[in-house]
Length: 458
Image (cartoon, rainbow, N blue to C red):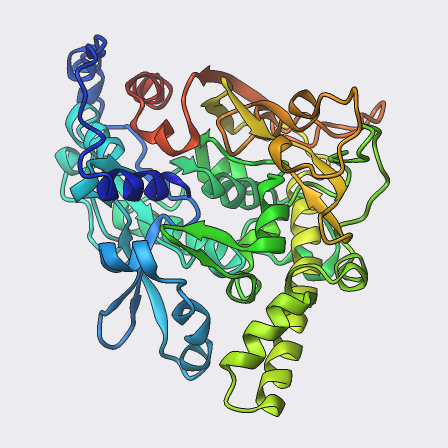
């Protein structure tokens, strides 16, 4: 999620968000769908947030570790998110609290406008599992799947399965289907669930499809979901990710599974030479990172970890642990990407894909030689150091998308085609692309209009 970074910049600039531009006309959603909200047979809706889309709080005290205060967003490197591992192993640690709705002071919204649309125009009310339905007037409900976005998506998949079971119990209907709105990384969770349910196919290697998906889910909205991954993850695992005025360092990121699970698909051609030619380059191999001393194997990371340890022996043990995290997360994530793009046949679930395609978006990487003489993967044209005359790095590296996820990745449309093999993505019932940035997709009123049209159509 990058929207809070722009929000923070706005706060630090003391009100840059104010302006005098004319506000375009917006659809009157309540009027458009006033006849549809009388449908008492409307399936309940589950909202699945994206990466960093829920707060993380300490289980015992309720103390918020993510995002925390505005000062934390500005100045923290969030090392505590990794340090809580020991507490979690003892049964404590962090749990998801609620949606990360936005930053009020900066007037930047992540999920508030979307929730308001569901409640005010769709006439859904938020419910918690364990609350039995009280008559027809109580059937228009939505639920939020809150999950710890540091963990494997499989953990969230199992939470989704349990939530659907609980919803069916609340409605007194063991065959009740639900609708899903899946934002960003949430789309990967929904994708896996429709294929395999709560089963761990990453360990077994058996990508046999599950038969219950269409019996449990009616319609799925995937909003800005990186079905084929995002090359931004390559950058983050090399250098960390900027948050406010600081950087969440690599040694923190490698303890999370999600930056790995959003790496580009193993068969996607994303790495090119400085001359603009495709390379057979395996960034899914830990040896590739180890031999080039990238990311958690770099001397820079080692120096930071050793400097923060009470003694060298402890620091070296910590480095070995971090590198083991990297190897395990990388291998599990490779299997995850293969699983959610394995051949699949339509099972009756209606899938809609919404996103943005007007922003130049990092979609490829160049194997560059930096100013220090070391190889590195670069995804931004202005950062290519050892340039070759005549190569258009803007066109090579940037593809249509929403600034974070390319249109091709959202559509699952960039893998080698094999004649006679069924598609790797679910048949798409409809798609809509807007001129919108990734961090504003949920807020866009035209997305909200088409969302309600898709969900409420009978």
